[in-house]
Image (cartoon, rainbow, N blue to C red; front, side, top):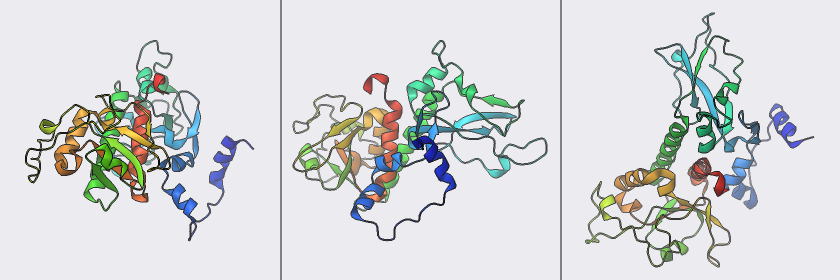
Length: 305
């Protein structure tokens, strides 16, 4: 049977319980963001008809606007939950789900083409299927959906990083130089925040909000990153014999924007005011590593692939 059909019918079969005593290989798979992403159910992109695991797609769902009778498409996993009392009410006064989930490739260029004239995909959001919504329903799509999803996804990544730093118990650490990076163990991902300059008084912590003023934009001599703009999209690093595998190198300035990086440095001046931040390869960091990779995929352009 075809893999797509198998994945569709697999949901009807009872799921096997998680192993009580997983093997070391199973433990590595459970904390591997790429293995977890590939294990998700396969869904079809409503615009390109491409079948991919759900992790590579952006789900949209109709959300009612309280003051009007309009239903707006919003990114389901990035939006706040709609209160039960505000959900769409039919003529029979029965509360129903506003519509099914419609999946689209998680890519900014694709969402931009939906609102761009003569792109071949102009207004293609009308292809979404919503069997529970009547024919006369007023469906709406944001004219700036690509920027809106980008903003929400950046906010999600920033929230994940903030939560990880606040409850840090060895899952994340910083490194001033590349020499300090290569000495780290159990690395899952490396974040580049831009070069930094140490405070004149090393014993005094940086003042809150003063992170941006203490940054030095020139790259450090020990760092292999020579471009002042930082690593490019989908950058990978390998430094044998210290690391046995390649690791993703995320450019946070590119992913979150300079404002996002400055916000993190203002909240955690003693932690984020360094060139590198190391995310460990642990189960507790799985979510943030997944969102970092999804944001990287969302911002990627056709020439990057």
